[in-house]
Image (cartoon, rainbow, N blue to C red; front, side, top):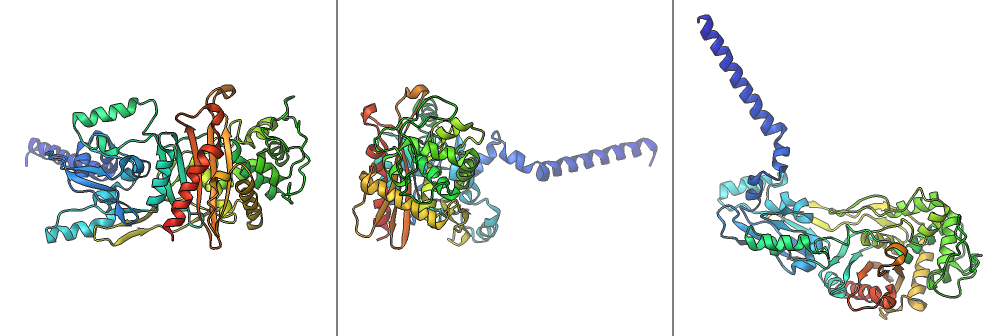
Length: 488
């Protein structure tokens, strides 16, 4: 071979080598990046080329697929009671991608997950159409319906948890939206999406998981837990030595109470009538470090994954004495998701043991074989069993003799504990306050359900009539009742 030909051969060899390197780089190194690129239309086409698996509640699918008649996107997602289940399912749209369970478990639902390789291979030999697997949830249909219908036209959210396992039984958010309204790729779907995006009421916002609110007086159960665990209070019926005009540290302002009988009130009585002065003083006695430690044991200052991500609730660990006193009654910078307050309530109801919240029970193959079974997992032990039982006695007193009377189930063998809250909202409390209620139901076999309810804005209710006991407690009652009835 002469010299020019040899040079051409070497150059061609280098080109082939470069092509092979480039091809391997794209296929193996950048594959995940390219697959995740939102401009990669092939991923969307693949997602809807076959029927998706379903999301299951109480053994029944709450999703489906229909032939869309489109050349590329052959199947379109459908939903049963879409607005009620949207905070759980999220959406799967040919035009606007997917979110929540539809996105997180997309591999199982499309059948593309590596764990379904055998099913895909078998289908190639049998000639069967490719199918997606199912996501089986922990949700209770009756509880979800009670939560959604209880909220009605109000703006708010409900979370219900099984305390002994952490299973999420209900997750409702209003106003809501129908994921089916933009599941396709048409002008009609685009109009529905744009309308939701522009809606000032934020119907696509998952208020149960992604919105954080001032908790107001429902946070007092956390302060009570800190007071008991730190030893600042041993006897819940003993005087707390709190003057009526107790002054906020670093301020000349006295703490205002909205009810009488708070001077030197016991912890039990202070929770029953919701004394700001007693709990602000207790927060100051415990100190910001121990208050923050207790809040974080319950899950504050960290995101939660259910597997859908929940925003981190906040307790200000850098607050000064005055800020910490206000934080201890759910004001200042304290902010929480409804999920977080359901977790607090569940831990108290479960004798102080906090279980990690989750709402996916199983992942199933198309042939119904279980690919993954989620098991209950302890997250922390915020309070001792002894102190948890003291907190239960106090919360049951709130329902039996205090502001939480509208949550009482009046069922034989069932005790209900709760706490009301009306949280200030806006600068100088100028906006309508939020109505909170947290509660649990307990039988001789333990507590089957703990609930957190927030009513952010109530239709047709005057500001003076907004209260946790009046607006939120009846919703919690309906959810607890639904869970108890569904369990016989």
